[in-house]
Length: 537
Image 1 (cartoon, helix red, strand yellow):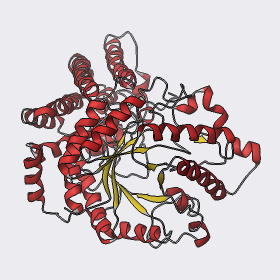
Image 2 (cartoon, rainbow, N blue to C red):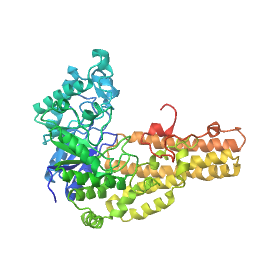
Image 3 (spheres, rainbow, N blue to C red):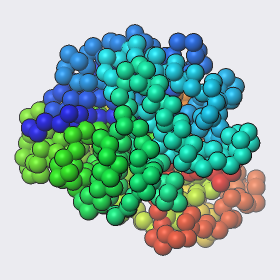
Image 4 (cartoon, rainbow, N blue to C red):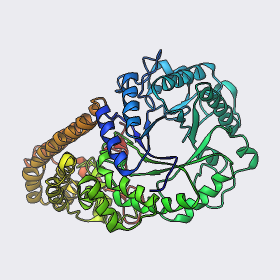
């Protein structure tokens, strides 16, 4: 097995799902078995900071005692537990609270050149120094697209935004050094500010005067979860080498687009990535597991992907050997686990070369006002009943992970009715087919809330097995709202059929393509509020 200084996983504990310490320990056990030696916990505001009671308030933040316990456990299993925080943007939840308004620039971005901002960041590092033995730290700084364009602009006028980033980075690096930390940071802003917002590209050369201003003690993390050709990774590594700083690479095991993973797409992108990593002699690798928009997907659902990526990094691309090795390591079926992506299996995703998430976009697609109805019609029938049966059968072989298969099988049972329910309803209404509408109301609309409740119960089981309770209130609001909406639509249909109302105004509307540029439709959105309604939420 090739030796890397760091070959680890980053777990997102900031998007409502804060993993229970015992679940983190289970993941550490798995990582050790697969040959990983590092773990980053991505905590935007979900760790305790002395003197900052509103930081992570009501969010399930880790206490100092919990972090120390995990640090010891990780070390005992050959895993370096590395803090992964933010020091510029992505303060999504703190900026909601009045305490943080005075140090907020715009959106989720901290106010640069403000003394109170750096006093706050100092407290963050003091907490990390107290609770982690590692002196590596990821300081974030990615996706600060609007930096300097909010309160900073109001206070100081327009300032060159790279100079702002440089000043801020210098100050954060100084604070990190004060506490003995060696930082690495996401590298995208150095590219975006000089490439009109673009990050990726081949043959990209950032000006030397820019590269030279990166502090010598700061390593750059090139993150990429998207490309399918080795040349794309090669080009970005060459661009990063020009900085003359240590390079980390962050790939991705796709678990951040709804309830089901994208195992095949993860492997499609990470295979060339690991080839490039090896060729360029990259010694620091992190596989990110994000939890965007609610952390709906279990990190454990991607165990075969994590195993495969580690094998790729060692030069083993033999799929049969990998499947056999996975079974020998975990006593579990590789193919069964890869089947957990079935809830998102469509024409576009079946070969592992694209991503779309009907298990979320169609789950919350409204029955009468379906923003994704046009794309659903273009896709045609998705065999969710078959998917549900396959996952239920695999559940019997899944051992301690049976709860994941049960949850996604129940989801597929929901989708068997729900996926095209709005399309079928509007079609029958437009055709004046009252008989079909009556059947839909009596059968599909009547049965669906019970299936949603069964899925909700299994998802709650999964959540409370893996995560702290904080954040689940969001899922209760979403799924509870879905159940109520389905029942309400049924009542409207019954009123129409009984002559109590003469029409259903929503069904009179003509459904347009959500994105006219997508000729075949696109069943992809990971933002609940963009799926559920065209209105304000």
